[in-house]
Image (tube, rainbow, N blue to C red; front, side, top):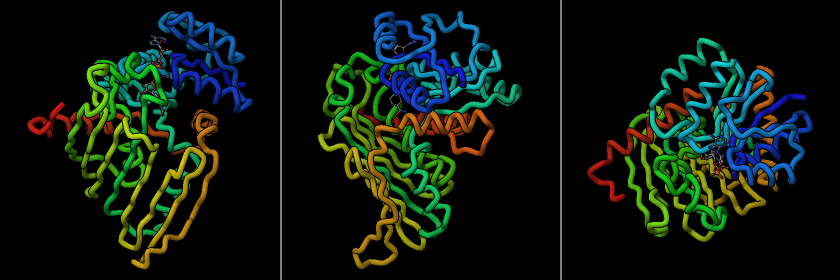
Length: 330
Ligand SMILES: NC(=O)c1ccc[n+]([C@@H]2O[C@H](COP(=O)([O-])OP(=O)(O)OC[C@H]3O[C@@H](n4cnc5c(N)ncnc54)[C@H](O)[C@@H]3O)[C@@H](O)[C@H]2O)c1
């Protein structure tokens, strides 16, 4: 059994506890500063031990650490893992600024620590199938892409105005938090993020959050053109990826929570061929991710987002904000 320590027992921390336990290959311990949350976790999951102070834990007792605290803690917590030579998975995004990122990358390289950033979709079968299709060349070379994503986050996280999402210094908001998922996919599918521009705003949520609820981002990825449309207020939960290649288009559609489809068209007949249908993935998202991370720990080839990629993702967003300053309305 692998011994896993999950740090942060909030919304996503609980998903990781559940995911690693459901692999049947792990014992899970938890570090959480909120004692009420610790009690709830103990009542819900078979956790091995609990802690409240991350800095005082001897990490050598664990095979790996999963850091699921808000983004402003990620780099310092990752540094402790590196210092104690313990593999780790970091929740996204890498951080809120580039402070300490270079040193972290250098230390990881020197100590050769196994690690990755948990951009979940890279571990999910439907997205992995899309990646395989891109690699197969069926659509030729992907030259343009659009990522369209909207959902009512207030319904998903009723405490949205109390958590990191509402706070700038904790890396919340659509631009610094949600869109980084799709930048990660564009990196994986298309290439390196280069120059970007952004418009972001708080269009609906008002002053209960100090961050944005909507953003439009455009950028170049290895010379290709990519756009991102994302909001956290719309009623339907939608996610569509369009990839336009030199031989045809691939399209990923999240039809609803229980079904996603991959479509392909290589003419203008209006007919889209269904290349894949995936049912009920959402309930197993974090089991897929845990299994994928266990492969990383075993040194197997894997597609986990590297810390370098997550650093490029963060730099791209920060530069896009700078590049767009005169136009920013929020
Ligand atoms: N992969 C995904 O799809 C996904 C989804 C949601 C959130 N996230 C990411 O996960 C991270 C956490 O998000 P969340 O929704 O779980 O937030 P949350 O606020 O629900 O939970 C964070 C938890 O961390 C705890 N915490 C804070 N400081 C701590 C410390 N020093 N030691 C131990 N525990 C500490 C808090 O008490 C809280 O319970 C963020 O970076 C977020 O972007 C990822």
